Amino acid sequence: MSNIIFKNIHKSFGTNKIINNFNLEGKDDEFLVLVGPSGCGKSTLLRMIAGLEQIDEGEIHINNQLINELHPSKRETAMVFQSYALYPHMNVFENMSFGLKIEKRPKEEIDKKVMQAAKILKIEELLERKPKQLSGGQRQRVAIGRAITRNPKIFLFDEPLSNLDAALRAEMRVEISKLHNQIKTNMIYVTHDQVEAMTLADRIVILNHGNIEQVGTPDEIYSNPSNIFVGQFIGTPKMNILKITSDNVISNNEINFLDNKIKFEEYNFTKKDYFFGLRPEHFNISTTSDYKFNPKVDLIENLGNEKIVHIKINNFEISAKIPSHQTITNTLGFNSKDIFIFDENGKRLRS
Image 1 (cartoon, rainbow, N blue to C red):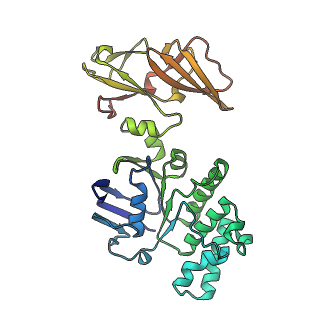
Image 2: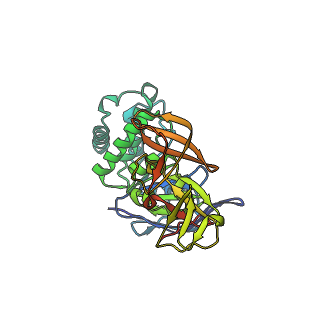
Image 3: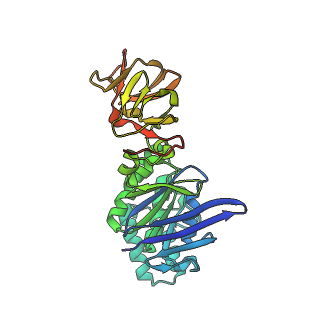
């Protein structure tokens, strides 16, 4: 088992603050995904763990050992890069065994570890091929295999699937998840793809401008976003955010929303602006919905098993996700339990 702890990590490039007081304690052998928009600091964090970037302030501990000043080769981490980083003049076996040869491991040990990794990744028949003879998915398997042979305490993945097509990304997500279940080692995975984050992670860390917005399981992040940024970052299409001005506040616990008077017994509204969040999948055409409105359909995107319906009402632009066999006629509905309420600063209000 292994774990990682970040204490008060800061990182800047010149006057540009990349990581701001990052604190996190990893759990034994968990799959931790760092997700956020480009430039939020997730890859920088990964490189600091690997020893490829200096830490300005703070401490990183692996298995209770401070690693700030350890040489990268002594940290017992293995990194899988977005670009594969394979040696073009070496075959697959040579690429996978290169790190072990540098460490001057015995030939028998090298052969055994390479064959074990190749078997796990189902690339035994590729060991004599050069990288140029491999597909993108095969090259990524080789890069992962090279990391496995090192038997690291922590695997570091830096957007490893971004160069693959959609079908291969889906396939490799499954393979990486199976790999984690099989070898039971900490994995820290960086991506800007929320689908990868939701499907792979034991826990997700959502970053924005170097700050942690929320940490939680995929279910926690989806069902209980802490603010508008998290609510819109997770979910496809993104959550509808609709501004409710103070004019819409009817009483302490009642608001006029999409021509419906909605009562929330557990909240106490004041004469301020609020934001309502509704996920597209929470709209429906059921006549038993708590609240209904008459939509004006602008556009329908047919995705096969479902449709994304773009709607205008009361100067709001809304997207709704409904099954492909359903048709919006006169009304669209939603239930009060599916509404997320945010204050004027975008922070989630909780009852």
